[in-house]
Length: 263
Ligand code: PEP
Ligand code: MN
Image 1: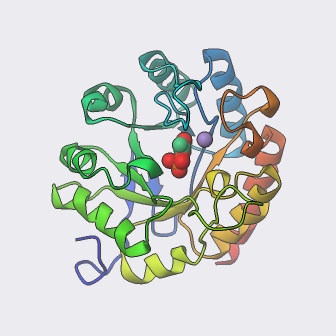
Image 2: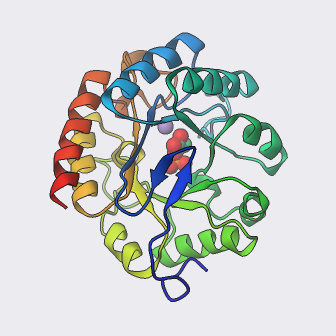
Image 3: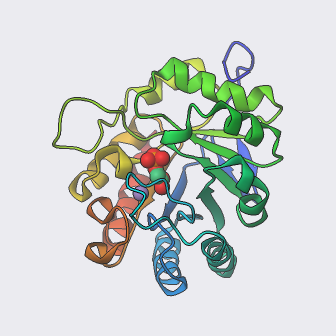
């Protein structure tokens, strides 16, 4: 169902007027975690002014350590909805557990399935039954075929509103957090009609790599970006090292527009 053999034309999602896929570049930006209402307002205002129309932020966080900040849960979801509505943005946030589906669906416009859950087939089937868009992130050890098969799980339950997200895969180099596989973009474009966006934040783990990789992703044909932004990265409760400043995000958006216009 997700293959081009099944459907030739690119899938274009239209979520409350925001289009994703085709010739539309969708930018999702915000903090890694929803930390507080104030922080979310501050980040949302800056990324909205720079041109982002989709607000990201985790309320349920998949942390490596159970002792790290786990997210604000429903309180975080409420802030996301309130702040996004204030600016007229969409909300994308991660769903980690099928038991939270109704709760997250109540506040979000797009359900995010994180890299760690790409192979959680039970979760994939549940979001496949949901009547709302899903963004599926590539598992850190998943081949492109496995990634597309995970999307197939969602589609096979009747939900075709799927966005794919390349977010880097594990490799041997320790200079970057993950190895951002930009070749996945043209490869997936050749075999699937689904939109694919790129997350240079988790893909590299390094603030100094975000701008160049965002530009490269758009040049490679990506349908959008997911970027972590924080006004005081050293104080961030998660992923501060890979969060860019609002001023850098503004530069990123300008450069992305220039590149997109030449395609
Ligand atoms: C995220 O986007 O918040 C996240 C946890 O990313 P990933 O699932 O790609 O690690
Ligand atoms: Mn993060």
